[in-house]
Image 1 (cartoon, rainbow, N blue to C red):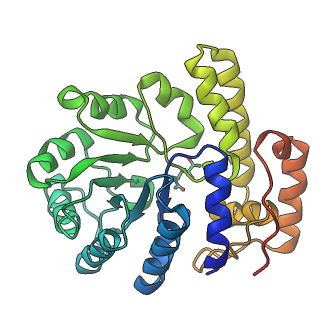
Image 2 (spheres, rainbow, N blue to C red):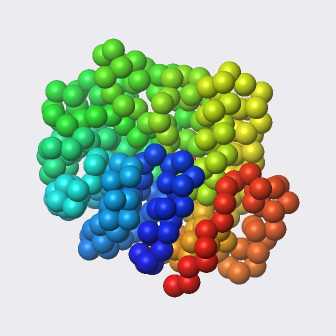
Length: 289
Ligand code: MN9
């Protein structure tokens, strides 16, 4: 874990127009870190950010007691928002049970807004989110919304529109951002904003200017980039791209592991061929570990 690079990465992302940081989520491998490490990472981002953008700390854990402690800690260090996945070793398909679990976790820090992190591909919990929001809003006083990492645009729209639009529903599938914008999205959180934020800010501007052919062209670049990253274990490839860009976060923790040097070189030359280094934003200054 290389926390020394966090200030530079934070400055870089904010400089590229990122408007918030989601910490210890999927890309940050929160689930592969120890509780102490998660606390250290959360603190490092809150410090580095210094109030320039909201920091959301992901506290999900198979042990709800541990998740609750992480939520308490996030509140203590001045995080702006908390978020959590549901437990996923024992798979849950019962909305009521997930609401109960999330009430436990969100109760660890009832003063700051809570977002349920819906990512069924990884948790195995494909619950109905409209029902979740309806039930959870009665049980979780600080429920603010969802991080919605699925591809069901119709369900995303229903969640956005529920109860006069009272929930903040944040889109999580980077390769479908344009579809989400058309459906009403006003925020997104995802892996590839770490490596290509300017591509997406341009896409959003094109959409807002009703230049759909330009927005589609930019989304298509994102789809191609993600397809390229997916030839390799995705998150290992993300870390490699961050390393190429000058942010040496090291390899992914096991069970994911890192790319070999050969794989990193292949990835770099393929990204170069597709023009990634022109359209995906600036490079950082090399920060050695
Ligand atoms: O939630 C990310 N999900 C996963 C966020 O990593 C499983 C997404 O941002 C994806 O990485 C991205 C690429 O598939 O959409």
